[in-house]
Length: 351
View 1 (tube, rainbow, N blue to C red):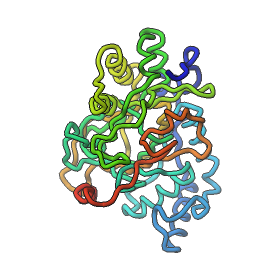
View 2 (cartoon, helix red, strand yellow):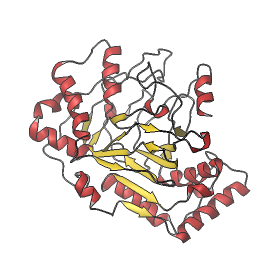
View 3 (cartoon, rainbow, N blue to C red):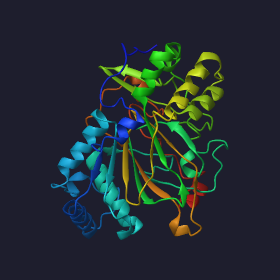
View 4 (cartoon, rainbow, N blue to C red):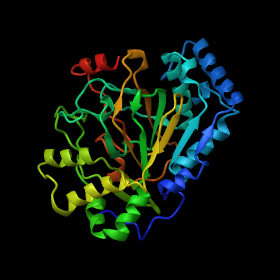
């Protein structure tokens, strides 16, 4: 079993919902001058014929905004573990321009990685009519409630291109607070969580096996170099263990259920209603995020649509080898890009 944290975690990343609500330090409002600088950078890359994915941070200079970007990175990695950037008027931009803008901000935050087998670096989080509980369906393609989890990257960014008609609120909780609650009240749950589980890769692994799971157990909690990190997705764990021929039961199942329950507890869970143009950035190592079920507007152009980035920080924390390889693609690797056959239907649904 991996090394266990020697005691309760301490630091600004340990918080309750009331503490986060009372703290405005993790909310960053863009000024008019900063938005103008972003617009100038977008215009410059578009003049060169460059779109999203085709340029790096050197091509998208943000000298005025750089200090705020650095503060966001520090907040996500060393502070509350979450940041909210507000003030962007998403209605001013068509979708391609918004993606270019978002990519420009993303490459300043770190190194984006692939999010699905089609190699998408910016994906749409919106309802495609799929059933969340069907085989190998990923929750971000549905309108269902998504339970607390972490994504397999250092950070996840969500830009709200359009909010839902109703519902869809973001729910976040400190995984560090969840760990401390378990340590105080159910320490017997920590050993299986540190030992880890086989995670279901939902048909997006490196082999042709649709039931591929991680090649090794990935810890839910991993302690290295004085820092605790979390990797959790109850659905992927439970289904992965079934596919591995080792279905969860007993104390291990209780431990997984306890993490999800604590992350949704009223005093630990902070709810956020997205405004159009909001950008939420979360540390996947320290924050568990979830989403309420939502209802869409009937007009296709008004459907709830969040643009998602998975970004690894350039100077991110050290990760234990068994924790860093979460997708069978190596340390901090993204989802392996597969040949287009078999993904054409998904492409149509996301178009």
